Image (cartoon, rainbow, N blue to C red; front, side, top):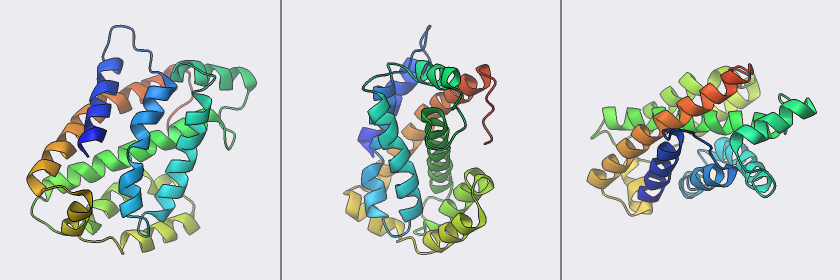
Length: 197
């Protein structure tokens, strides 16, 4: 988790700079670091892994020919495909929503320190961020997956982390991801695209 936190500190530094230009590669590389966590939570987070990782892979491919997130959105606007399934911009929005869910999940884990269950934190994060954007069949699959989460102590063991260190990394991610998510919201809104689709 330390690697994830450090990568998002780098992204935060970029978006907080005077002229923020976030490279698609920097963004997709940082976001891809969650794949290890999804691997550990494979059964419970299968829905998220398939959705998040699939969209992230598309962004990684886009990074080979497109420099920045803003350029990527502008190209989709010019092509008239912003909100079409599979567009880079739609994939970016869905990855952003995944980052928001992870942020809320981390905040809930920090607020319930000492609780060995991940279930309540995950359900609250899902309901707050992703539930409104999912169709009924996905909502049901997510509810089933979230109810089968392993214990926090097992996840920490599999990650090779102690509770004291994981809390530091969770807080670092929350702090660093906040300006990154705000930057993405501002980018979408500056192009008159909205963020609730």
